Length: 252
Image (cartoon, rainbow, N blue to C red):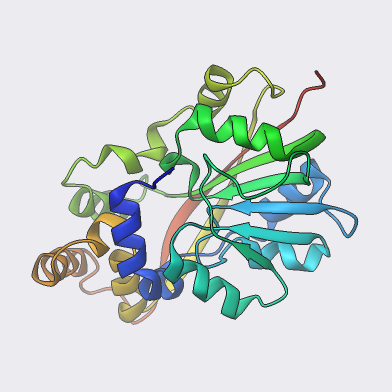
């Protein structure tokens, strides 16, 4: 199974900017997932579409045995270098390099919208142990803040449909793609990413379709985004709503 070409090109080209510029996740959201999915020292957890390990590293303190699956070599290399104790494997959501019933929980942070839902959920069902848990996580920019809404308008000019995870009812997607999960529960958490100008540039450049552009085109988009934050303090906050969707594998 190949990955979406925009993801493959953009994330390989933009791995450095992704690592520097993408936000982490709120502690309250992580605690919620750890509690709901029962993650702890006696559990094995798959972080799927793990990227450079932004979410993976937040699971390390649980003491769980972690395995990260990431298809983009450049992202995978950064994850392995940063988290040497984590097992890191090449693979996609639709073709997991894991044995049947080999993990107790699966987390997917900022990645499930790249997957074929039915194929990926079938693979997640295959690798989960009985009553294992699934968590889907996204940081969505808080567009109730006017400047953030304008920022989104500047970077979403292309109407890039694959990345529009904010418009999806993920409970409906899961239910419509698989009958093997309990009803999906939804929780939200406020989060803020503190940025300076260089961090903001990295945040823009880390977006897959922008990272995949020719340098001149990418610089033009970054310049337009910088106009949005013109006059801001040297450091400022980019607000998010972190969306968490959780469910468990049904008994057969």
